[in-house]
Length: 219
Length: 169
Image (cartoon, each protein chain N blue to C red):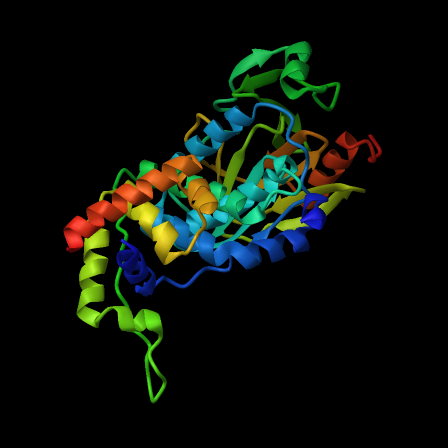
């Protein structure tokens, strides 16, 4: 048997070239994961299945992570539906239920009706055009596939964010088919990830809302 | 490792760079063409999970476990058996250099025959042998990559060697 083991060790395999994963990954400041690790795993698996589009996967250019958001930059977008911002937001919930789901109060404290789906709590804002604000805990995961490079920015001191604008990108929430999305600012504060989306959302306007919610804006 | 655990991205990237080749090859053995995505997503998951990494434990088997899990998930979702795609490369012996002892063990056609026999083994057996003998992983690292106990690696490797010996002759 020792001879067979030596023979195995003498085999040389033509391995494919190793991709430089360390260089391709841009890592957001890591935050402690507190809740529902299993749910996060299931959500990630569901998302991976939802976005299993071979032609786009083969051309992944960069991956960004921030809180519960993963942004994959690709050369070609996978197919996705165009749906209204307010579609599929889930069931109406009150403030107390939203706070229980998020582990903290939904912000802003004065807001319109709240809706919940798979732990993602959303409301519609006028910012000034229609915008969708979604908040979720650290166990949630949204996957975004874009052809544009996301821009890292600091929403507030110690509060990182990613701004994605330009051509529509594809967003996938757990238990929902991927859809086309407009301009988006995502940021992560504490254990909560925030996502603000609007077709005509301007960067300055998104930042103004984010800074208000982070407690550093004029609101 | 301490710097990476404190959130130092560069320190984490350095750690990954040291081990990404072996992690990629493990993923390749498991999932074939899905390996690149498995590595990328596995590394991202490792970063997010670094807070749960046990201080003082070796990083390499921990990373291998995460990347291999990712590769298995991708293989399952792809719904097909991964091809090992094992090929016996030409031994790189040139000029007047004496062949290495390993190179002297087998003639080229024997190596090809052995590679084919290994490739024909059931998944569990060929993965165990590939991790131990092609990638030269330790038993603990192989256990992490295969998601089994160390004792299972021992018995699986022994049985796989027996099957390979029967097939290879």
